[in-house]
Image (cartoon, one colour):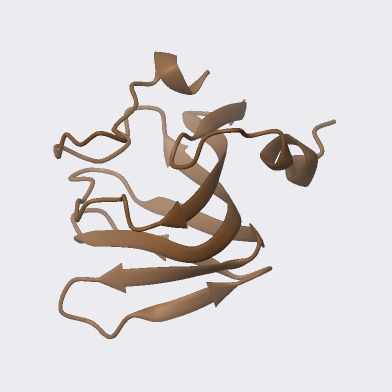
Length: 119
């Protein structure tokens, strides 16, 4: 059994997802967000599920109104949709992504992590 919130609370670095489990062809990850470091990006072939464990996350979707996700909220960014996230305070999130999903899509930035860096 995995205590998701406890795993997320152990994270030291922001914007650095950690793989905590696998199911079929998906990784279950936790991350800590604070600030505006995530670049606009998309995932050409994969949807991306966001679940807010604790805090508030600003979700920006290109050409759509931005919205705030709060503790307990879940949202799936469809494949191919440009998006970015940020948070003014500490926010703990869970992500469910296909194992082939690149952290920041095809955009390279100072926060981009390979799969091996997320284990």
